[in-house]
Figure 1 (spheres, rainbow, N blue to C red):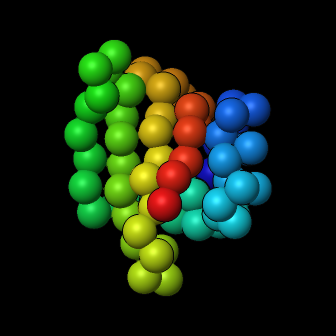
Figure 2 (cartoon, one colour; figure 1 turned 135 degrees about the horizontal axis):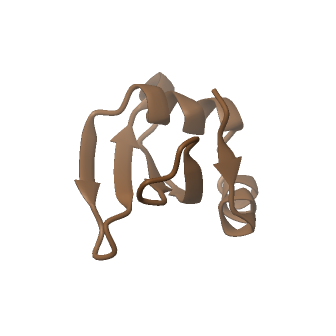
Length: 70
């Protein structure tokens, strides 16, 4: 999967020990999806049981990840 990450997303992934594979698993198999105020997609999934939230810029293809949290 071709995914682009913002500098902020990369920093948060390092800070929170979230791997690319975990974030990309959420992108491909999420449990919950809803928009933020700007229309960006908020995806929540549970790779290996860990709750992870991935925020993707609206209308981006391939996905551009703005931030990642747990």
